[in-house]
Amino acid sequence: MSTGIELVRPPALHAAVPYAYAAVTDPGRMVFTAGACPLDAEGAVVAVGDVAGQTRQVMANLVTALEAAGAGPGDVLKTTVYVATADRADLHTAWEVVRAAFGEHDAPSTLVGVTVLGYPDQLVEVEAVAVRDSWNEPAPPHDGDTATG
Image (cartoon, rainbow, N blue to C red):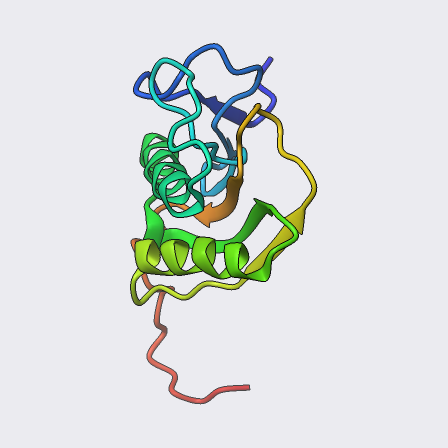
């Protein structure tokens, strides 16, 4: 029996995490990612102590998860950015990297300072909600009537 949910586990990302990296709903348009972590392919936290370096890895991993689910950064509806810090400068540093990764696509986002994240030495995590194939829908049928109501 199908649940209408496709769990996505990209082979390019570390396989020993206890969750899928993204989920796609039936009929297959909504994409919900797990929080992307600053892990390399072997599961090690990268750039220990470096908020910007970890955020770059997080964004690379997020893009990999989105692409494996059939979406990309331009399909993101919302992100949540978590930074383990009490220093607003660290929040700003992480945010600048996230914004640069999305370019002109400035979807809504929430930036949150937290006390701790899941992996030892982890400083940053980003989760996203996206819509795959969001701009490829056919136009609705047109009956020739120009009146609106």
